[in-house]
Amino acid sequence: MNKPNPSIEQELRAQIDPARVPVHIAVTMDGNGRWAEQHGETRIAGHLNGVQPIREVLTAATEAGVKFLTLYAFSTENWNRPKAEVDALMELLVKTLASEVDELDRNGVRLHTIGDTDSLPTGCRTELKKAMDRTKANDRITLTLALSYSARWDILRMVRSIATDIRDGRLDTHAVNEALIAERLSTRGLPDPDLLIRTSGEHRISNFLLWEIAYAELWFTPVLWPDFRKQHLFQAIVDYQQRERRFGLTRDQLPAS
Ligand code: FPP
Image (tube, rainbow, N blue to C red; front, side, top):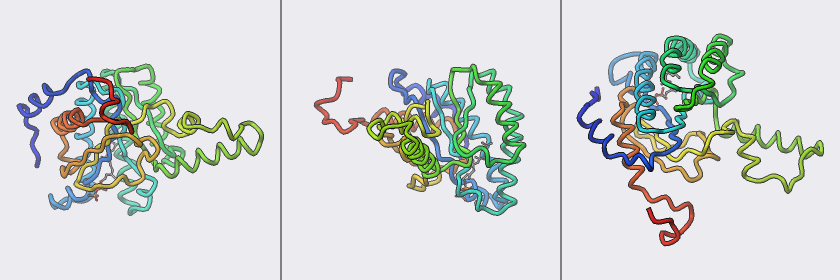
């Protein structure tokens, strides 16, 4: 087990420049199954051990001054996993929301979701609604859970909605621009992620935020999600701050930092 190391954590935290913290961090939480296998446990035990890192990453992000944290919790494709695993994940979501909502609220976290949440079981929808209503006035950090989400599902919805409005004469083709597209994705209102983290050594995007990550910095770590701790988030931010983001410009065109 990758034990948290308080001195490394403090050291990394101190290296973060508060003026250049990513506004929005997105995370693909991967490796619960492999963690379980390595520990001789069931896949479901792997997911249970994936809850503590969510607390850690949320606390670390809040402490660092990140304003938006988006977690890929359940993809459209995850519905095809064995029923027992899907049921266990849904139950875990309900239980975690119920047990954590006070703490989220106390810490100024606003809970938000993206994805086809209508397809979630009733119990999940009820618990999510309760937690979102309860935390809607908070503004320290927005925690977005991507649930039954995939970027292609979202893009398809957006294209259909624009096509329908053009067909019915409510929208002119020339009015279709990047801002309108962003407005019709389920991520509307969220700034594009500055930093995308993926755990477990996989170097893939896997249908996550394809439109939104156009200029995100990507950070990959071999650490399996259940072993992810605050120090890893701080490390990702420190590495992010060493990158030069040019957004298609030349170095000479960038504002002096
Ligand atoms: C990926 O690991 C993880 C998931 C599909 C689920 C993520 C869920 C949690 C971290 C638990 C709870 C979530 C909430 C919001 C309460 P994997 O199963 O794909 O791992 P593998 O690639 O090693 O098999």
